[in-house]
Image 1 (cartoon, protein in one colour):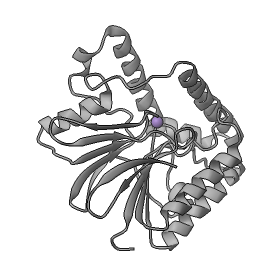
Image 2 (cartoon, protein in one colour):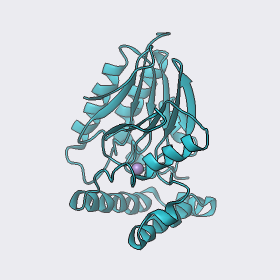
Image 3 (spheres, helix red, strand yellow):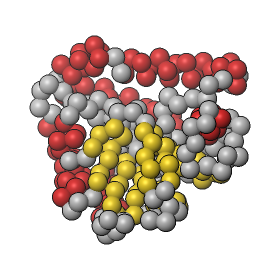
Length: 264
Ligand SMILES: [Mn+2]
């Protein structure tokens, strides 16, 4: 479909030990993609589609649980739909395996695309901060952000990644899935709602970009598990996709360049 729709979704957290009825969850995601495939030209998944994804040097049998989803993505690609997957902060450890399994193009960095006359900035959203963040937040939040940045560096260290990939998959997975579960339960017990236009990091990041004359019409992020569609002063819109396990949010760009948020 040359003038088809472009879809954006994120944060399915497949395989999460904190989301019940794993198969029903995956099935609904497949149904959603199937629905999109009727008029899609491209589908962008903006990260954390898996709650934990690691590619070991030893064959990992547990990946079998995701075969239906991976098969669906291959099917879409075969149909001629461009399927894109951004890494998030839960599924950054892919070294070619996921691309092979799914036929999707994997993005390791944020990027800007131009479609139907609109410049669109795409990223998972973790680690994107406004320039003056150290002056902006109180001590406690600053400490939290610094901790997150440190952890992000550790996760991205090639040496530590190599070590982790040497582990037997059952050990690594036990560690990874339980860590992810802990963070999900923490989020459920202590949800972090939208912080407001003057505090939400991703909104401030977008405003910074606009100030630096890097104009985009739309900024689309995942990561936060909140739904947001906000017009900022420059006229740009900042869209945060909710998730694909509770809110089932997706965004759709039509061939006139209109972007809308929906729930499946
Ligand atoms: Mn995330």
